[in-house]
Amino acid sequence: MHVYQRLGLRRVINADARLTRLGGSIMPPEVLAAMAEAAQWYVDLFELQRAVGRRIAELTHNEAAYVCTGASAGLFLATLACLTGPDLRAISQLVDQMPDPVLARDEVIIHTAHRIPYDPAIRLAGARLVEIGNVLQTFPWELEAAISERTAAVVYMAGEHLSRGALPLSQVIEIAHAHGVPVIVDAAAQLPPPENLWRFTRDLGADLAIFSGGKDLRGPQASGLIVGRADLIEAVFHHGAPHQRLGRPMKVGREEMIGLLTALELYLQQDHAARIARCEAIVQGWVEQFSRLPGAKARRDFPNEAGQPVPRLLLELDPEQAGLTGGELRQRLWEGDPRIAVAPAGDRGVYITPDTLETGEEELIAERVTAIIQATAGRRVGD
Ligand SMILES: *Cc1c(COP(=O)(O)O)cnc(C)c1O
Image (cartoon, rainbow, N blue to C red; front, side):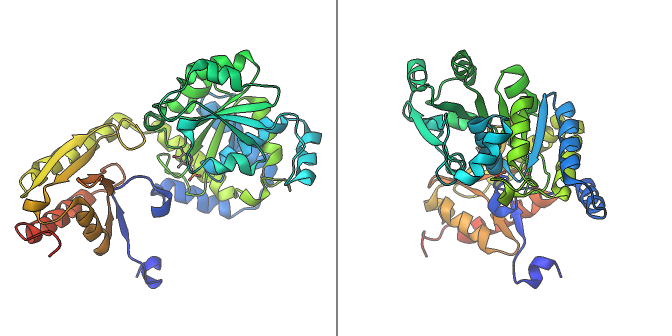
């Protein structure tokens, strides 16, 4: 019996997205093996953090890198780094000042269009958010006008799904840098393509970029990555654990550091074209199978929920013919054993993602969807 089953839990087949609440992603065996190896020795954690950072910086063509416990923790630490800079006195004084930090620069500018449920990590660091624009549009002068002597950074949430209403990143960087203000990019879910690991920083000039370790990188769920400017990463290092400072509650273990490094090495070797081709083939197969079901319209959807270049399936149901709504289908898939998680597509239907599946799970999903709709077709919705 699996350890989850001994706790009375069901396995989840994840056809939704790399969601934290479902476990993020599945680590490849090489990552698990490296973590087990890391766990067997004691090591100087400060040295390990620096050595792993140097290696990741090399691999990702960045000046410097730092492993943290997740993108959210990364946002917290990156904000701290911009609030204090690498000055050790300012960094340790901040610890004593909290929760009322005395900072020369304490404002972080963010697009209204970029207010997301992860942004409390910025305020947790002691920064005040200054919003620019509205959800529909932002003008360059609004960013210009928001910048003052109190501005510590601009935080930019990357992603096609968030870019509507925001200025282009390149323009934000240009304006911010003209005033000496650093730009932090939250790119937590902006992989693939792997090139994004250096695109935001090396290519576009952002000062720091943050990625989740437990999403597409398939590292430990409680890991994340900050890459970018060496002096700011140095500041991150001093705010972070194992130092007994503000980052201490977000301690990253040696297993996570080694796990993320190993996951990253694998990720950069992976054939991403083949991976996307596999997803295309699965979606194509589902389109053919589901199109035959009563009241069902199936088509390829692209890009995915975070704007990444990976296809997924959109299955729309006509409740009159299929006998159930998209929401009901999603509910029934979730209530089975194993549970199957799919994403809602409004009232109309569901999105089904191939990218998060282990080999063969696409067939299990096809069988379950087919069985559910065949059983409900023709009856009245709600019966
Ligand atoms: C997932 C996500 C986060 C949080 O990432 P964790 O690694 O789970 O902490 C932050 N920002 C964005 C845009 C995300 O998609």
